[in-house]
Amino acid sequence: MKRFYDAVAMQQAEGGWQVTLDGRGLKTVKGSGQIVPSEALAKKLAAEWDIQGEKLDPTQFVLRDMADYAIDVVSADMPAQAQKIGAFGDTDTLLYRADPDEHLYAKQQEVWEPLTENFEAREGVRMVRVSGIIHKPQSEEALAKLHARLMALTSFELAALESITSLSASLIIALSTLDAETEADAVSLWRAASLEEEWQADLWGRDLEAEDRRAKRQSDFLKAWEFIRASRD
Image (cartoon, rainbow, N blue to C red; front, side, top):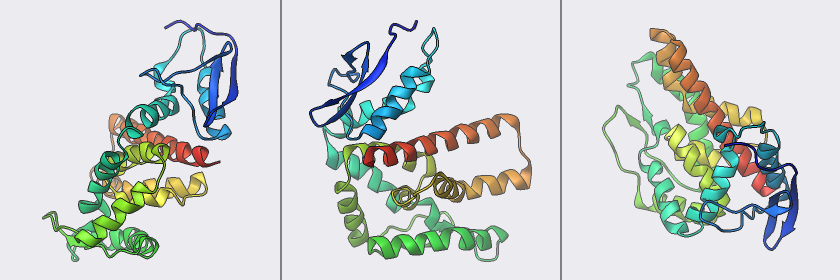
């Protein structure tokens, strides 16, 4: 699509901030006003429009799409969204370790166990660790606490967490991003989430296409973290 606007700006609106194009406030895909909770997030959304050239590149509107999703989908049914994200707690990647006699197990213990223990202390839950791939359910009490934790978040936080849990296959990683204060902290969490994939790549070799996919997934992960931080500022 050809660029159809000249001036990108922001304005305060009822309930938050809104990006404007040539003075007209943006709307979501479903036609609602695209009102975001903070000036910081509005600035990031405005930047996505401002950097466009003569033709719009839809792949550069990651934060805009996330904002639309938060407003149009998540806010319409918060319990369903919390349930969807919370389901990752029962199959969390960080809880499924290799057998203790495997080399990978030691690396998982080194990287994953501190994250898991910190998560348990922070959320007041106890999670079941598993050696192997056979599913062992988490306790109903733990899952109920985690659902309540998710229900206490905003629609914007939940929209970003859906992306993060899908990318990391981990609720532990996702909820830990809420406390990641710097990009370096977020990168560290991504590296933990992709530990097994990187281990296999180091073991069997790397190819360009797989590396490109990993880089894209890391970028999406960091964009979701950026969205959370900006929505709170």
